[in-house]
Image (cartoon, rainbow, N blue to C red; front, side, top):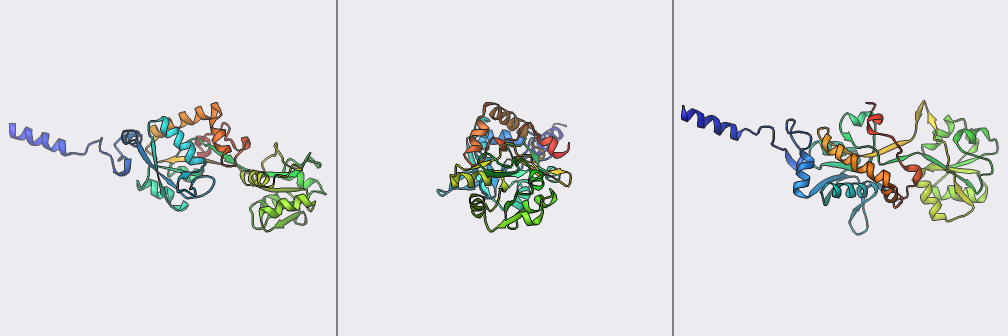
Length: 294
């Protein structure tokens, strides 16, 4: 009987049980949701997946990993006790598969949250939002505050880069083709507004902000109260967030708690502004749950 008891104890000790973790900080289905976070804190480091896309996550001229998503994550992770961040460069379309395969422990690529992706990964609450924006001559002479306003003002012509998604948005908002002036690049849009060829230009918020700052023209202004277009019943505004493996609910909750503090203190906006975002790109009260349709 003693021999049988010793054998039983030996077999139990060899059983991986519920505390065994799988590679790169991930945990198996029975290991509990906090496995990745706990291991990263113990190691003091974590690996993140990124796609080398400005301004979200990329390597600068010195080979340092940076970007709005990276710098936000860096602050939060340090406050959670994880001081070192290692980057794993991955094609954007392979980021989710890489996370699931434990190549890295979270995705810091400014990835938009949508219901399809929510089935594969667990998103933190959004850290930024991106929508469309317009710029006009100083004082906004025609009072343009939306694509519909451009459509309704017969004198309003708008410059947009050839092939840009905004062309379709303008058309569906009622702007006739003859008043949509297509230009080869963003700099040409600025020139068209400066020369009076158009009364407005449009592109995404961060892109427009960067172009205006580069132009440094005091006679041009971004419309601060621009109303986002609703196309086919859906807002075109997108929200980006950090993504975790589905099992890492404790990690997500801890991350969200620190992100909320950054929003409240204004620290989130300070980081975003370093990468061309403005107050208009803050996520507001939007949550991952709402974006995932939960």
